[in-house]
Length: 311
Ligand SMILES: Nc1ncnc2c1ncn2[C@@H]1O[C@H](COP(=O)(O)OP(=O)(O)OP(=O)(O)O)[C@@H](O)[C@H]1O
Image 1 (cartoon, rainbow, N blue to C red):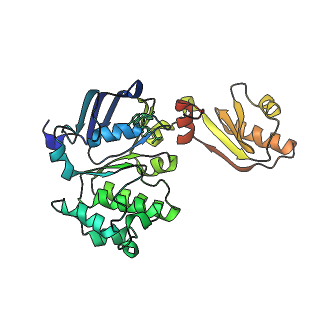
Image 2: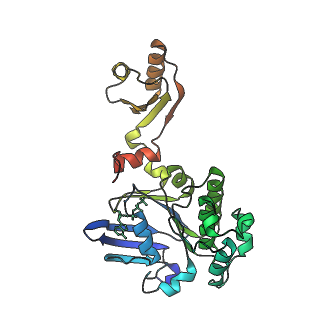
Image 3: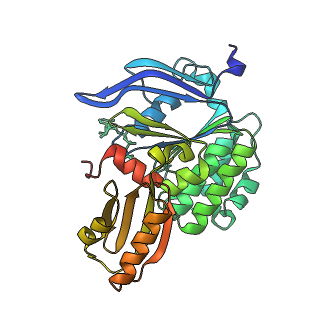
């Protein structure tokens, strides 16, 4: 395979330790050209470490990493003009003005986008003469995204790109990622937002404790197992679910996920729906937002990575 045909990313058996702490443990990852891949995982799962190894900012202890067919450390010079990076939390010299920073990055690219057009697209025209430290958190994020995109990269790393952004800015970033995909740019996105992964990514890789625990499209990952679906509804908190369970087929489960938020899991056929609504009527319970659906990506994520808080 020539370098031109090579995938955006190919990782085999990646290991990375910090002292005694294992951050990445035997990770494999394949990302074709033009794909948007979301890396999901709890805090400390190894997402940023993996991305930084691909970006050439950290060295792997073991394993093979190929970025656009090249080695991110040995071929760093060749990769730099082809790859855009939006790091977690951004970062810049505090006194630099927004336009100076973007101009500086643009000057390093062979065929940059017009920086003032990009500032405009990202809603930063009014802040072009504002120093980095005086930009709001969301504006700093947008400037960081502009810096990642100004060189017309073939592959972009976006580490929690919408963290701390207001809904308008988040929507703008989503639209931009959609535009990148339409232009055939490959995007590796790390995020904690399930709706972001579902909306943007062709593929989702869930990692936990440095290992891949699931890989597929959001649709594949949330596919009901053995025809099992969920019936969800909202009502007053603390319904007596023992009574509801007694009316349902034995293999069904019923849980209160959050106060007043109920789920019945199992083979949810028309009979089960009718039993639940009849039970509600009998007990004077008004069920709101009753719907039969597949598991959400968040459910799959919590099933795979557990519900306990990570240290
Ligand atoms: N430079 C470092 N020195 C020591 N430990 C580190 C370093 N960088 C990361 N780690 C540790 O490696 C593990 C993986 O960190 P990483 O930042 O890759 O996780 P993450 O999945 O990106 O987490 P988050 O969602 O919180 O950003 C964590 O336990 C972290 O504390």
